Length: 205
Image (tube, rainbow, N blue to C red):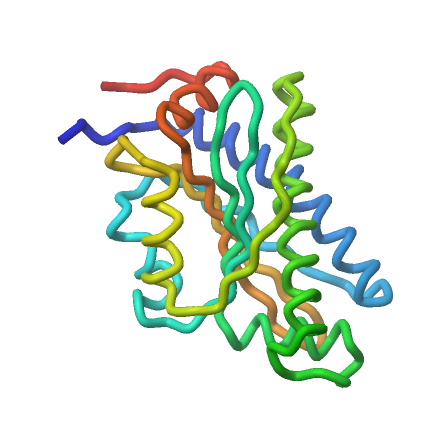
């Protein structure tokens, strides 16, 4: 088993700023989608956590969730996952369809896929800007299932060799609906080390 990767407080602050830029851009886009409704974004929580801990942070492995994930390809390769509790996903569908839909029908799924794509793309654009590196994102895929089942499938496909993954977690809230979700970055192979190296950070052994 590999030793856990660590990041110090200064490195965490840098990654939080990256999260603030990317997710801040996402809230602007979401606000426009919600007819300029004010959206509050909490300060992103950045941490390196073990794979086993991830489902617990979204309510447990049996928690019903909606997840939108895609792969970013560039100097580093990694997966971007925007994961929301089922209730939050349904609230987004209701808000963006003006109450016409409150379920995961075809239109509802398209809404969730687009919201997840906006959040992930905004974060990726911020990473590209700060690192002066070009990334391309694969088309977003939507999955609605239990958190453990979804994350397990993605982790297996990512062929993760580290014991820990870098996770950026944030919450959104509006005047009408509480919308919350986690943005999770999953490295592919040595992707985490490359991401940190590109940002000028150091990995401790």
